Image (tube, rainbow, N blue to C red; front, side):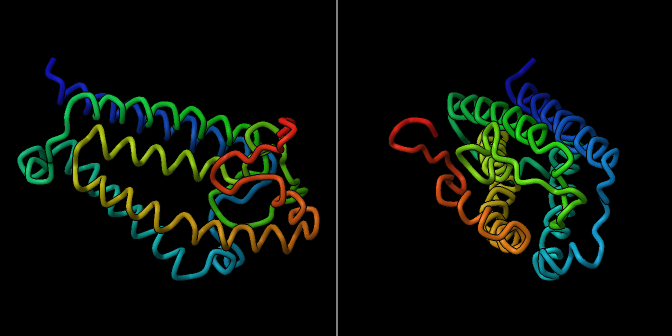
Length: 208
């Protein structure tokens, strides 16, 4: 088994993990609690039509990149670039760790999680687990995962995808926090004071 095949195998293991633990299982938990999974007018308005369209187009481009990377190596080789093996394995570690953190963060959110920007029934402000020190651990995990992906695949498709994720994330977070402030009011504003957006923010006394 050559190393390139190993990286492709890891790629598919990661995709399978995402589909099961970061999409299907959270969706089933959310649906059981009454969360609507499909985007409705309110969710699209909260996100913004342009940002929603950007997310849909990015998803389509990612699907195309996955197909080419997996099934059309003759075309894919044009987009490969050289990276030292050690950097590619560092990418595997970053990506693998971030996927576990991503899944854990969704479990902590429980019924409050949704792909769409919409306040759910009996929506609560979660401040436990990673949310006790950072407001958006899932977005942080997504950035780290895509960065690791770009490293271990050494493919310009996924470098471009990582760039899109980095550009999209602050725009999405801005919309999300506006929605949460509108719903939770001062409670969320106070929460923002002692938590970081992407990275943990600890109080000097070490309690957070």
